[in-house]
Image 1 (cartoon, rainbow, N blue to C red):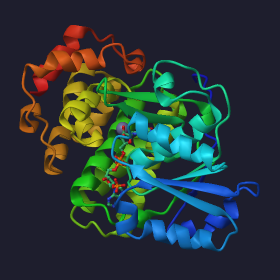
Image 2 (cartoon, rainbow, N blue to C red; image 1 turned 180 degrees about the horizontal axis):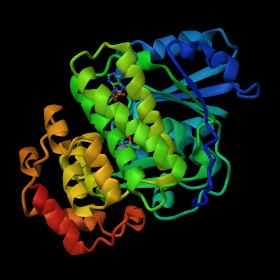
Image 3 (cartoon, rainbow, N blue to C red; image 1 turned 180 degrees about the vertical axis):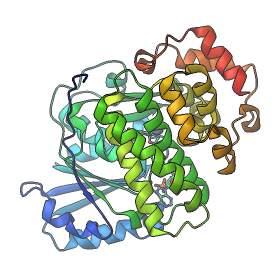
Length: 364
Ligand code: NAP
Ligand code: ZN
């Protein structure tokens, strides 16, 4: 058996109603809490007020930073860290999808590490432990609640960059499936496919291990069964529970394996065409699978009965880039955005610039 090195320090509290345990897990010396969330959804679906009322019974001082939009950008994360510093925040609570959770982790990092987030995008090292982080996901997709990575967008350079540090593992993640019930059909699909691509990429990564493969395959099987049923019955708590679990497994898998070429190739679809993150990956998934080939691809194809493209199409995801307005002339700027990303170092095949161009062209 191949050796491995496993570190998953986030305490995961999973189940319906588990949000009530939040006061019990707050560290005694954390007195000023910054809730990091988005502008709308956590208010509209009542999650923010639920958390606030649970926290009202503690003697903690609560601050709210609700400026996070999908694909969090550098200046907003910097602003959040300034507010955290000014108010001597000692714990960050991220509530929302991957965008709010990533922003919360990054803010917790910037409070204890000098400079702004662009410095870290340019390569500055995260050298200090970060503020304690608690994550509460309201989508079932990114797995950010249990991993050490964040993805931050730079509007100037039109790039999305992943930052990673063991210090950014959340201390606690509370996964309450009822918090994902308010997701629309489209958001359910987009985030569900993000989770699927995490586990497929994690399974294919050169950093995959015997244990990450087990988790990845379990997650693929769950998503394959649950997601098509869930889109027909968005309020089914049992299916929501399965998807949240599968997505969390994805977070654990990629915390070990990283994501491979697919996530890199999906980023420009989001930055140039505003295609949601998970959908961007789903569009290109069959093309990447045909390119990589091999035993592990055969296993995935077997699970999907050689019909992964149909599986995606049935969920409403077209796998043709043209359907999203993308034109052949875009391919070169996509290549510039993608080339050199570390995802290619864990992809199980050498990928050339021509390969990338051809893959985008095939997906047109
Ligand atoms: P998201 O960008 O966090 O949220 C998308 C939209 O869904 C937002 O408008 C949000 O509203 C809304 N929303 C969230 N929860 C909802 C709910 N329960 N009901 C109704 N609406 C809800 O989506 P995401 O796909 O979870 O996260 C994507 C981000 O995570 C990207 O930036 C991606 O790069 C990153 N990512 C990170 C990792 C990682 O490992 N760290 C992995 C994959 C992806 P509000 O704006 O009002 O909140
Ligand atoms: Zn992703």
